[in-house]
Length: 199
Image 1 (spheres, one colour):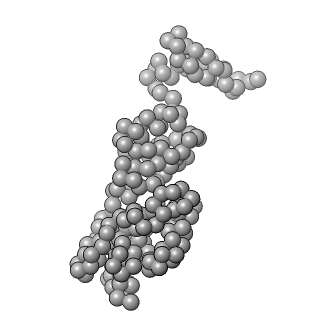
Image 2 (cartoon, rainbow, N blue to C red):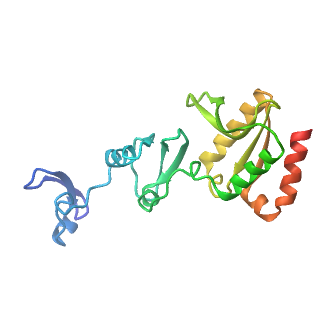
Image 3 (cartoon, rainbow, N blue to C red):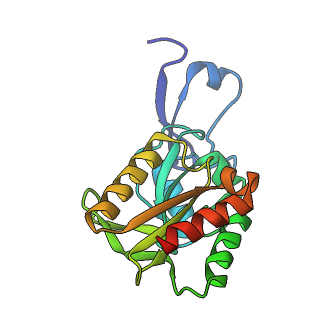
């Protein structure tokens, strides 16, 4: 049709690929022969499988568009191919320092809790359990430690809304502490946690 229309070919080594006429004229040839694999959803799936991650998305758009996955610890999340290549992995597994501080504080109150519980809140849309960062099952209370960055996108906000509703349905009181709150005023957050637990 024009210089930018894709032409499908099989190279001399049997690799199937496509290229537009403009790129062909500039000397580009088979990316497989050049040692540069084409990023496809199957390629991404294979790369994730190497680290025991499971890909949930079935279409690759580009290197900056996020795809969904389940990590080897059963956390559901999303990431772009660019970030994956840079070594970024599951944000839930890489528990942040401030979240560890919150958990240490709750533990210092001599309360038994289940960290990262995935046995109570079943998301009926996906048939997967949602995680509670700190589940005080004897008190029917839970504390979520939400990083502002990871909880700002629309998909995560929808999951957070489902989590709040499921907690309400199961009569579990839920307290959400953000990294911004904690880092701005730790003592105030600690008081908030104590008040939440005692009432």
